[in-house]
Image (cartoon, rainbow, N blue to C red; front, top):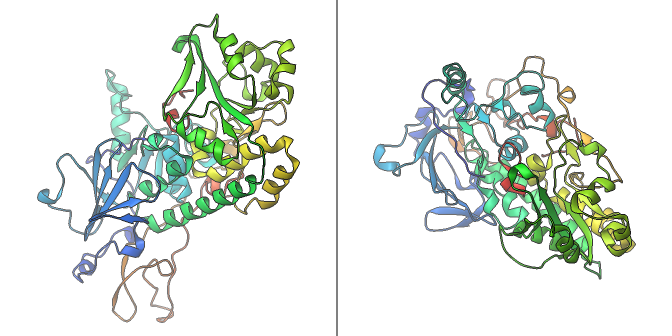
Length: 494
């Protein structure tokens, strides 16, 4: 994803008073961003590089951060609100400057939306993509409140639409648009997940992002280890279909993150290559089915990434799949994935319009995705399947993938999260410096995130409450954390 958050000077959203630092505290000489509250990763001469992701770095100064999105060559200067903005000499040429934490945002990128939600920041979303699957975000957007995020091209050549966009522009700090974190260039699913740390730096939520990622990484490793008892490695292939209006073709994907996911599920990718963005395209539709059949002859699990125009995901059948790719009844006995009915779909969760949760929150639930695929692969290996099921960590939320014909998509909809006032509750994000009851000026830590309340008990320590959850974290559907789709973010998971 590419972060294209744009600074806006025409207005400002509501900001909690507690977001900003008392300027007098900066005179203490303490840095606004102590080391224990920074993004966890390897430390270079001045920049922090995260552990797995390769597309961004963060450099911490006394009262501001310099975020370098190396994937898109975008640079952001983020200064703590309440402090003095960095001087022109301190700002890199071409950098965009924001006061943080961002108070209100417009989000058109569904995966950026998942990161924001996983961090408990749904209350800072003022306008949301029409493709949202999160129930609360649906309720905020097309599901009721109609606070739908507008793209930058919305108002071109239309004065009325331009005025509508300008009004939205004036109401937010920034736009998170397609590519908001550029993680589509990362070669593995966990690397893509680690971009939650990138989003967190715009909100001073690094400690929370570190903890979320660490938990996901540990659960992912546990599931991978459980699947490793398998002594066989069945072949798995990701295939897709592009309709005529976009240049009809059938494809086999070699995306690096998919091959890595297959191997972590203890299977063999077909073919076993390491191209990051490459897919084998069959554009001659008179010969494509025969070539595809020759390629899939020994494949035991097929992940079908195709959209079926005119057929709802809930109504899809094996017959639809076979027709799409040119298989006939006589082929069933010859192809293991047909014979065992092991065709996997990415539409385990969807909104009423058919947009799938895969393209929104799979990246914030890598353990759930791995569990889904590992169970589909191990279905013919009882010992491995038992090991996986018995070792599934608490907190893992599967369901992104489903086996065609054996389960139906789960519907996520706005009524699961009604918003009476068309607002998701939010709370302050405390600065990392506070004044204690004894007058001392201290850095925050994981236990004492905000200034203590000194009115009732001067010795009491105040621990900030967790950020208010939205749809994925409220138990409204089973996520505690969390093609080229029409809205264009599909590079993340395609």
